[in-house]
Every structure is written in structure tokens, then in C-alpha cells.
Amino acid sequence: MPVDSTHPDYDTILPKVARVRDALDADRVKAAGATYLPRLIGDDDNTYRAYAKRGLYYGATSRTLQGVSGLVFRRATVVQIPAGQQPEEIVANVDMRGMHLERFAQGVFDEVFAIGRAGVYVSMPQSAAPGARAYLTKYRAESIINWRVDDSGDVPRLARVVLQETVNLLDPADPYAVKPTDQYRDLFLDEQGYVTVNVYRRAEDTAQRDGGKFALVESSEPRFRGARVTEIPFIFINARSLGPDPEDPPLLPLADANLDHYRMMADYRHGLHYTALPTPYMFGGDEGDELAIGPGVAWTGSNSDIKVGMLEFSGSGLNPIKDALEASVSYMASLGARLIEADKNAAETAETHRLRQGREQATVAATVQTVNSGLTQALALMLELSGINGDAEVQCNTDLVDARLAPDELRVLVEAYQTGTIAFATFYHNMRRGEMTRPGVTAEEEREAIDASIGAQMALLPEMQTNA
Image (cartoon, rainbow, N blue to C red; front, side, top):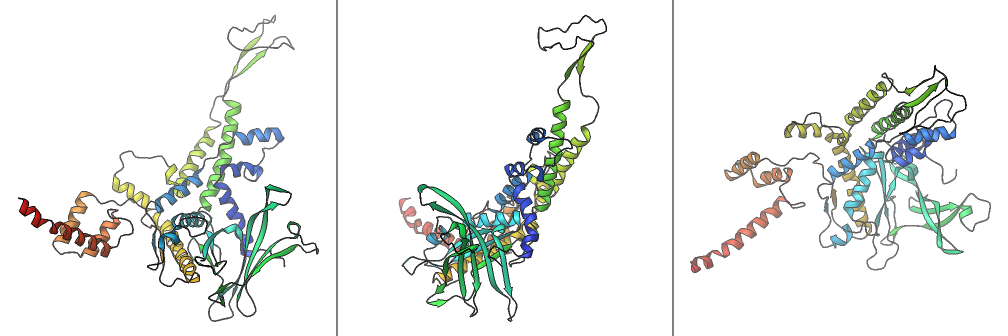
């Protein structure tokens, strides 16, 4: 089998992934033509192009993803790495191309929440020079084309994963021209159980002329502290689990509803095009006459039975489609597109609004937790392969509902702490949930800052008394 062979589960999930990927981009939907907007019976090419152009794509899927992502990342991602390891440098450049870990985490979350799957490859240092370290690379679901798990041992092990990549190759004849070229990165365990990485390109894109379909252009045996690596440094992150088995995209139901709405919208606007504008008519005029229409123009004829007028649409022919469009918008809102749902009750209380927002929190929070676990594994492995020992953790925000404390709630908390009913850790925990603390500051750190502030104020008291 060639290196571009795909896993059966990949073939099964790919059409679903493609629908969501397209639904996120109106241009992709329009470019797909009859895939999402079938031709009307009898349409020629010109008629179909006009019909498709009138269709308005309502971007519910992309707006929902943007809204949910905004809720998750409205608070800073908390990152913990071993002390004394230049955390700013590591966190600010996790991919060796200047990408901050928070932006990397948001990219992974967006992929997983929309498509249901993403992968993170921990690339080994390319040299032993000072400052060289491992780094992270994100892969989309479509790029993870094949994998194999070895179940022969006590614990299942990832034995192979094949990643499709695109590289820009320079044209030898033109230093300003580049050619996007597919290549396949094959990570596998050899017969001795060590990791080998081979990179292939199609033979026509290389200098190889031996008749083979693919050519090996790069091969490496990753090593850590001189010893070969025995675990493939790749983490699968799904919406609800970590592992190679793919899951349906969380936004698939919304994407399908969005595409259905597009078809109905095209029909509705197509109907408006033919019925909304009045059409002049004449019966009994002279055959072959060219008639103008507009101010200062009158239609006349020698026939006393001549009839002129304007054809105008009447009746309710388009109302069922209009009603279906409104129902479709409500259905999409019920699937999670809260940002596109019109407010039904302008007098809705803050508590009711918060509870209504919270309906979608469970699914999103579960995905965030999975992403946190996957990124924590990736960061820990990146640090380990860079020779940095110690615990690491990534925690993206899971409090999606605006939970700011009301004045009465804050007063009750303060009184409970002052009277000894609750400990400072409990008080601070509730303050943090109410979004009234500094991001990334623990209860112990806040306590130390309070003690330091009180100490500094107390040191000024004698001087103030003397001046008095």
C-alpha cells in the first residue's frame, strides 16, 4: 500500500468533516456549486449561475464558533511550567515561529469544537546546539490520514501515524516562484520498537526517475539524550476523548441545518426575483412595435380593444418558504447558534439570561477539558524532549457564563470570611468564579500580596504619627 493510503475510519468521517469545513466559509459553499445547491429542472449553465448567485449564505456556523471560542478565551489561559525554565520564551513561542501558547490553544480548540478532531505533533530538536528545543505543530483532521495501534502488549501503543503536509518548493528557474507540494510524514515504530520518521513526496515533484509513485526525501531517527525514542510524539485530541478513534464534529448538526437554510434562501430569493417586480403587458397592440416604459411615455394603438396594465404578484406563494426560513433560524439557534437568535423578551432578567446561556455550557466545557488534557500532555512532552524536567499544565477557561458577583453576594462573602464561617481559600475561590481576581493568581499568592501590602502600610504608621 502506498504512503497516501487512508484509514477506513478516516474515509468514513471525511465527508462529515468536509461539510462542516465548508459550512464555516460562505465562499467554499458557493464554490461547491451543485454539491450543496442542486440545479433546478431545466436550468442551463447561465440560469443556474444566476440562481446560485442570488442565494444568500447565512453564516450561522462560523458565527457560533467565533462566539463560543470568544467565551472560552475571554479569560487568559493558565499555564504552569517548571520554575526557572524561561517560561516567557517557551510560552511565547511554542511552535518556533513566534506563536504564543494561548493562540496555539485557541487554534486547537476551534478545530476540535468545529471539526471534532485535531492533532499535535511534538517535533524533536533539530540539533544539539544551545537553545535548541522541541516544539509543537498543529494538524487538522483532514491531514491525519492514517494510523495504527499496536494491541499486542499490555498497554495499546500508537505504532504509526501518517500526516499529509503541504510545503512550498522553490522553482529552480525562478527565485520568486513557489509551488505548493504535498508531502507525507510517516511516523512509525520499527521492528525494534524505536521511532522512525520518513518524509515522502510524489516522484514527479522530486528528481527521482525510477518509476515509483513516491520518493523518500527525508529520514530521521529521533533521539533524546543520545537514546532513540520509543513513543511516537503525537497526541490526538477529539471533542470528548484523547485517542486515534475519530468522533463526529460537534458542529455537524448546525452545519447541516445551515446548508439546508442556504438552499431554502436560494429558492426564496429566486422566487422574489421573478415575482417582486411588476411586469408591464399589452394586448391588442400592433405586432412588432418596440415599447418604451418610463415617465413621459404613453402606450397607444389603433385597436379599440387594446388592453395595457402591470402584472403584479399576489397571493401567498412565497410565505411557506419564508416561514420555513424563520423556523430554520430558530432550529439553528436551538443547536447552539445563540448569537444569531433574536431576543424574544427584551425584559429578560439577568438571571434568566445567564441560565439560558448556561444550557450550552456542558458540551463546550467538556471539549475544553479534553483540549486542556491534550495540550497538557503535549506541553509536558515538549519540555521533556527539550531536557526540562518538572510538571506542566495548560488550563483554558471553562467558566463560560458571565458570573460576576452582585453587590449583595459580595457583601455576604466578605461577612462570611470576616466572621470565620469560611476560609480564605473558599472566599478566594468564589471571588475567582465571580471574575473579581487577577488572572493566574492563586489564593496563596494573593494572601502573600495582601500581607506584603499590610506590612508596607504598617511601616508608615510611626512616621505618620510623628508628623501629626
